[in-house]
Image (cartoon, rainbow, N blue to C red; front, side):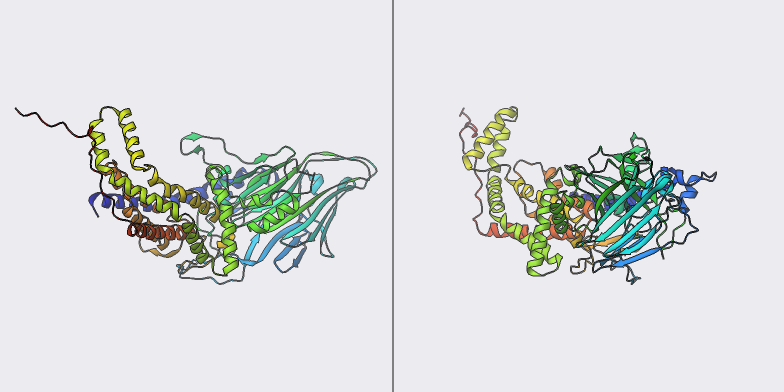
Length: 610
């Protein structure tokens, strides 16, 4: 390796270590900042009397109080019902779904590098340790009373009932269906002989919570999501981050609550990276608005809370319905369909088609830059469908499925990539004549460009051919990048030494640095360097630029080092196949003969004899 290469590699290595250290610092800072959530949360402030103690100290040790002042003297009644996929726990406090456990999905996937493996039978759960159960009716005290309901088991479901002041009766019905669906209704009955002024109601969708104490992706992928019939909008913890600046430069106002919608809320969801609680309104009964607020959760059980660190945070989501008047002996009923389960694309597409509400949008492939302005979303859906089809057809693991899909994609684009390689070799053969043109027209850039294009046309080459392979690969790369963020199929999928393709394949932590050794991205970087070494530089490119382009793959290594090993697997296999294709193409054709600058216009005039 030359001097420039050594410098570039050293800088990239230093940048990688610096980036990892800074990410740890940022996460610690965000944890400290999130400690203020309980102190600034509007609901907690309304439910809990103000204290004179320091806000940060209170937030560090106290989870957010629920918006309803439950009568704790009344014992909590729990009803647990189980089907073949889920275990539902209903509570009398709020009269809703306190917890849903997904029996087919483990709570966490332990990385292999951890020396102490904690073996438990816990499964993934939703609304875990949340202040309020799903479908709690919150708001004015006339709607909540002491918050305690009477639960009754019915045929195929549960009923929750409560009689409130002034003759108002609140009844909720839950009936189980298939595919993680629950049909539900909330009915408010005026049993009195006079009109009842019905206050505005918040119907709790659920609380997005991290899966476990090591769920570092929750801050980026967990939050509140809602759909207006055309577009979906996601709100993560970053929206409520108490930081006073954006990018450390622009000051902004701290958001304590998210509020949106104007009679057009088709559904809303509380979700983390791979699971969601989705509350869908009935046809022609959209909610008036949606709101979300940060909440501070209780500490994880059996996990020691580090000193001076914040409790875990979540985002509580609710549908909002306007105030109105219930005439004597009348009622208003709102119908809902709940999906409480994994973000499995095929299942969500079927549900969306059944109810006509695009439920698959809860996959949250992203919009704008998050999905490269729709390109990533388009290819993510195609690749996810193809990956599941190949997996179901052949029956191999998802790691080998990614390898097979990469091979198929490479074969489909083989003719185009081979043509690009041949065109690049012809371009390389034109280097002497291009150099002569640059020398002759060095003072006339317009004339130089025209002459260069004449030369390209004469020899039937395209100067943009060198970019073609990368342009072909980038949409697919964007699709994989977007898909892997939400593809639950890759959660816990094994491949060789990688225990979970949705996470980095950390083999061990480097002693003294507390830095992860991830093998897959290192192989990816090596394959990219190999490919760059075999790719001929564009004619006329400066030597310094050529060296920088050759070592540019190291930047990919820096940015993708701690990303999903599934993406690194795809990129590694793709680069190895590109190297094989390049070598094969070179073997199938004769070496290009350099073009000698024989054009009379480029040949210097002979000197006159004296």
